[in-house]
Length: 147
Image (cartoon, rainbow, N blue to C red; front, side):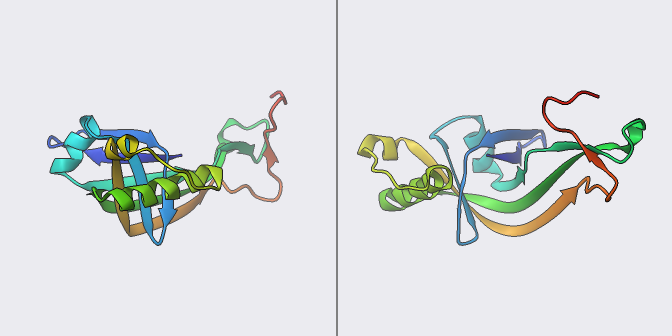
């Protein structure tokens, strides 16, 4: 899953969690044909897409509150969205998205392909960060343990 951020005409941010596919420096997303995000993107195609690994609680000293932090890795991508309208390209994009989660391709009915909006985002800028990297003496929270 990724989080897709955009801004409307007044500069109000709007962020959506979305499923995605990735191939050849392009991120593929899908949605309904209409909606708030589509209205925003028709006027401002700029997007920020964020990916993050599952955060894990870590600390340097279990007794010191300010030594606690969340450990995760993240990637932030910027680009402009374009909407794919070609039927065969939409099928290709749907399969890229489905391979991301299932490792396989599918067949799609003509109405389902026509009724989906495919977003193509060519990555223009990318950055990555590793947050909360503990030092060698740090502890790590494990599910089921107590504080």
